[in-house]
Length: 293
Ligand code: BG6
Image (cartoon, rainbow, N blue to C red; front, side):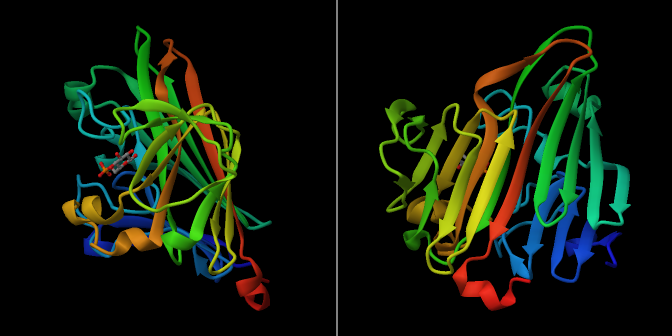
């Protein structure tokens, strides 16, 4: 296996890393935001990336896996925090003979982060590619006092058609509906389906849920640990129109399922490290059987 990592210019000359396990299994990560913009499994792109996405320093990329930290949603900080708009550094890279390709990216507090969030921290984001894509966010409190944060791996999955797709594994979970002033409901269906805008924080969810594309038969298994919650989001027609970095029709080809610690903040004592992981596995389904080796 000719596994390797390549570092070089990506869109608009921005630095990106390519994790190459083999020709058909690759991932791409921009240092701006430590942002995974592509994961190809058995030759198929699994993540959605908007055609309208900005690729500019200090701007978030629309699609892939934006890193939400230290604030989910709106609040005192910019929406979804500063991790997704900060320039991360490469801390280490590793290529193992068995075909595991891994990079660790790092972000520490700086004048810019302390201005909006006055805490000393170091964060690491580990992206590890095998036949799966494993991502891990680690946060260490290097301050003298405890701090609190919320975080999520805001993963955008590519779909053939949102109207013929569902999320499995959430039956029985309670959720806060962001479109109904955060009121709490209980998921009663085996499948979460999409017939309009959906923006929900599912609370303390099972550590495995699936995104099922009924057109292609593809099923993506999302396994998480350390992240209690799962945000499910599709902007549908009106919100898609309001978003400048997202095509009007693109809501039809994506869904976000976000492993997160969002409903209750994580409290981290000085010297302690918190970590949350998300592992994605693609089952390519019958539509791709001849191609799936
Ligand atoms: C989701 C939120 O996590 O992110 C939505 O639940 C929000 O309310 C979406 O619209 C996208 O946020 P942003 O900041 O990337 O436009």
